[in-house]
Length: 258
Image (cartoon, rainbow, N blue to C red; front, side, top):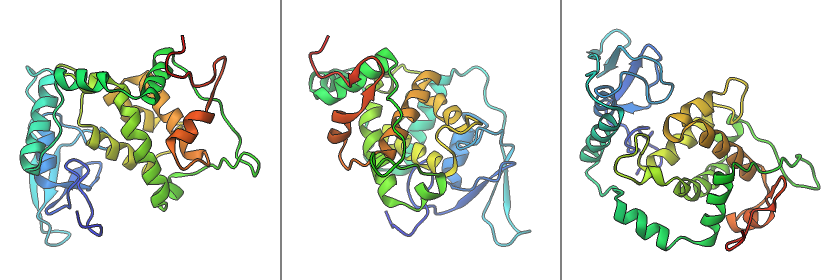
């Protein structure tokens, strides 16, 4: 992908025909991707606001085309809607996209590394890593959406963490999970959320956006752990794994611990 081209938040490819969602005015979409999305759920993929029309084929501020969003079919379940929307994006992308099956899940579980098993334990037990203050001794440092947006290093570290962390949630793999989604899409979606929202801001907007995919409790814990990792001075996940502390549990339990 051209590094200078803005990517569509749905298909992650360079935007070829920009679309604007009305009335929230988010515009990080290709027209075909956004229309496909809206055929299943009439809400913005970024902010969840209701979308009534899409403006596209812009020639000037007054000269553009408008697509009016039809009401979604009430008979469809959320799982069916998710399946159809993902298939449309896959068809448009015309590339190999990882598709998860029960066999894939079993293969992953059989080959799971100890670090991933420890992360599963954290989520099973609802463990929250302890806060470490930002100072010269700890070398932990705070960040904002602005500093995250301006830092390729922070974005790269976020992607590395999320690619592993999202493997914890087996319901993202199974064919019948109502909140499943392509992991690569979800990684980029969360990175985009971090560019525009405080991880644990008072509004809780970042948590709301992620809860649609992972559920409320998982979303809250993912954002907490992601913030702890990004604030830490470690360059490798293995280093963070070895030092992160949990209340009443010390460091994250090692493989084989009871």
